[in-house]
Amino acid sequence: MAAYIVAQAVFTAIFLLWFSDLLSGSPNPMFNGPLVALATLIGNPVQIALLAGVAWWRSGGHAAEYLGVRAFSVRNFLIGFVVLALLLAAIDGASYLAGIKVVSTFEIDTWRSARADNWLWPLIAAVVVVGPTGEEFMFRGFLFRGWITPGWRGLVAVLVITLIWSALHIQYDLLGITQVFLIGLVLGWIRWRSGSTMLTTVLHMLVNLGATVETILKVGWAG
Image 1: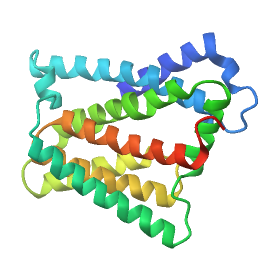
Image 2 (image 1 turned 90 degrees about the vertical axis):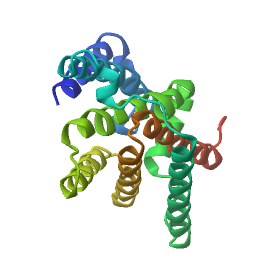
Image 3 (image 1 turned 60 degrees about the vertical axis):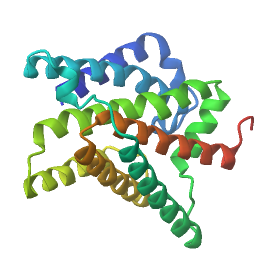
Image 4 (image 1 turned 30 degrees about the horizontal axis):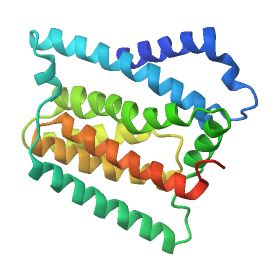
């Protein structure tokens, strides 16, 4: 929590000093693409650095091992990729048949506002690369290492971590948060199976890349 609060404080300071004009004309800052990109690009690296520092201190200088930063097998990658692909296909298919929008309002509005202000590439970098890295180091890295134990208590901890991660995605509606929760369960399982936060980070990036492609197909690149 301290790492998260400090990261947000650093972002807020930089925002107020140099980027406060990004709020002009935006009725909902949460759906402001440039602001979302800036918060992610600033806050997540600070948070990662702080967590790595704590991990280094707690592990006696072995921060990478503590956070699960290790290589992963092709087999585990393929298993995770296939499971997530099937899950997302099922969710999108069910949403389409039920007449529910596959691309959320948040994704559409942030994309359009970033496009209007020439912030598309920073937004893509934030959503596809920096955001997933920061979230995985926090939830499937730092918290996983501290909370997960063998047996049923470990399963409960995976569930709790996933619930906390899902609750932070308040920009989505209930269906979107449910989708985040299911993805989080898969990522938690893959982290447990492989022991690699790097693998969950790569898979998380691919999930967000797929969502970005869906947004482009829905809204268009040039408008």
